[in-house]
Length: 184
Image (cartoon, rainbow, N blue to C red; front, side):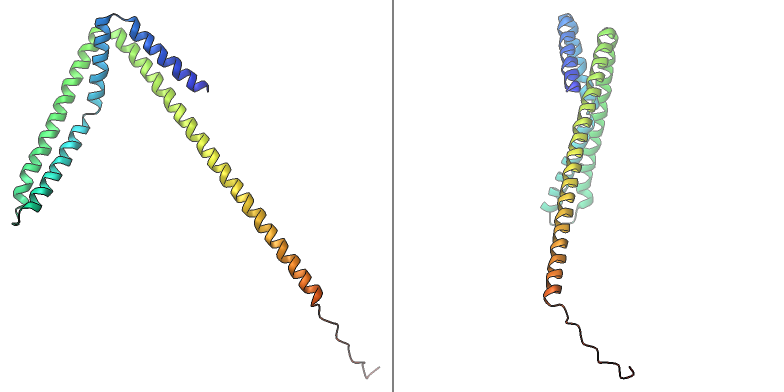
């Protein structure tokens, strides 16, 4: 529970930090946060462009009866190239904008980055703790199941041995009489 409390305290600290700053600075920091997120997720535009190009290529190839797969490949390649160029351009613009905002309010940006880094670290630690507890519970359940299986196997073995002993007593071979030795 300590990690959850620390996470909640850090989130409250972040809210208080954002409320305490002037409105203009808060707007800049919100813009900084959004632009930073966009600059980190630029690859999504590339993936969308590739998926759209593949879908368009497949539709174009299947809709024509002639084999024009090379001609159909040209628009698909252009779409991929345009999506890569657009993604890199957007990433460049967002990096420039975040750098400009960071230069305009360096103390606020650094404090926000520190709070976010602490929050991220605490959330990762909490996920690791939860995963460790889950694995421990699974291991405990497997150990209990193995223990039950071992006890059941032991019980079956004991029953088999008792059945064999009962069968051995009731059908015990009668001693065969030995003929007297003629030499004696």
